[in-house]
Length: 127
Picture (tube, helix red, strand yellow):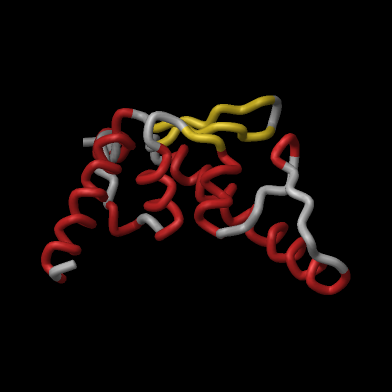
């Protein structure tokens, strides 16, 4: 058996997914806007395109916000690329920018399993 055939139909272990990746899978649903998922996870206001929010920040507070926002973007993009490499999401691009996220059939199954295990955890805790 060649090594290519051995790894051709790998199962995706949910243990190898970061919390961010799990959040993306669970919250995308039928499809979602990249910025929407980003703002939900990091709890940061969207600040670009038509969703620009005029934040009531000035000086040091605004610089700190901008630094935080810019530092989280590459982390989020890397997580999306890893999910795409694992064939769990399909990235909808406009040029070179990712605008939307959709789930593949494998991603739908894994997301359903993640939701199911999360519900079971809450039931065991008695919440």
